[in-house]
Image 1: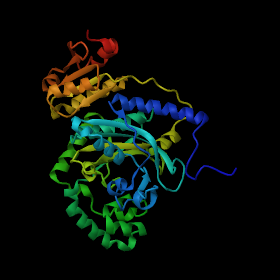
Image 2 (image 1 turned 60 degrees about the horizontal axis):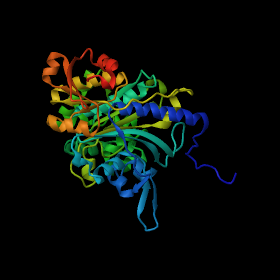
Image 3 (image 1 turned 90 degrees about the vertical axis):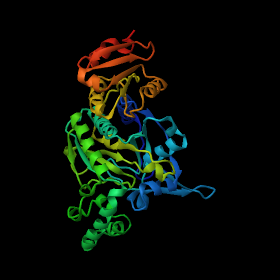
Image 4 (image 1 turned 45 degrees about the vertical axis):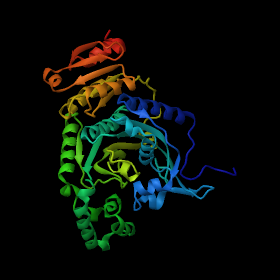
Length: 421
């Protein structure tokens, strides 16, 4: 053999490829049931996109990016992650002018020059979802529940959500000053990487797997949250509790990318030992403005395909994916949790559900449902919550019917997409 595959890459073929396709189909089914639609971005982007958004002091930028010059001397990088490219595509294609929430999912290869080990490659594949255009913590809760449901699709039950708020730029001002002071006190205990991080961006010290004892001595960001960030975090916790999502507060969790604000989370499988993190994500409200756009709130997550493949049994059967059909119109913020609870029950029965959290007027939300070609609209407001029933509208016939919360799933199951004549 004159040539072999580069270190840190793999060939997908045979039974493994069959299993891979089966996993992709089932993951796609979960994503589509939440109303997320696929986006594909280029394999390479302008290097500045990642340097500016991921952070100059992050390990990805300083150690792991595959960067090269093209024939005209432009610096390009094989994408190490896909959130920044998705936001770039969102802005470049003018999707912010559509209003409401844009929900995307992606699957594809990413590239990082890292030490290869079990389940970790230099060309690896990520599954991810991004919800752009809403600051309401209800959409954070949806992203967390969605990522959990992907693993529950394969029978995992003993999963743990680790949750934190990393605040906003306003919160971090006073906190960063104190953090630098404390790190100076423990300078002799820091590894070489953290000595460098402490100068450029001390927040990155929390990413270190070596300086664990130092991290435990440092002040935590949640003690310095501003009023807005505190309220956002409290509402997120209430939403998760309303959806029966168990979580553990982890004040040392910051995630590895500079663009995160407010929500940060990871999903852990406690039985997997040291390599127990399955996926993670959070909110990145400042990313759009970093790319030259307006201030646009957004939240998302990503998960490693290779890691999922590694912990699954060899033989899997695919599932047929249902087409999108139900669109929830929510009248005000106070109705969000009930909408998510009802939507969750429908998704568990394999229906596709999109929740419009935008709180726009009803006419605009109906237009959005029509443009997205949903078959049904479910209206939910304070009156519906009091009466414990919702109004359903058939978008093709225009006819409406009232159904109780209790019978909502059975109604759609029995009637299907032609239920309202």
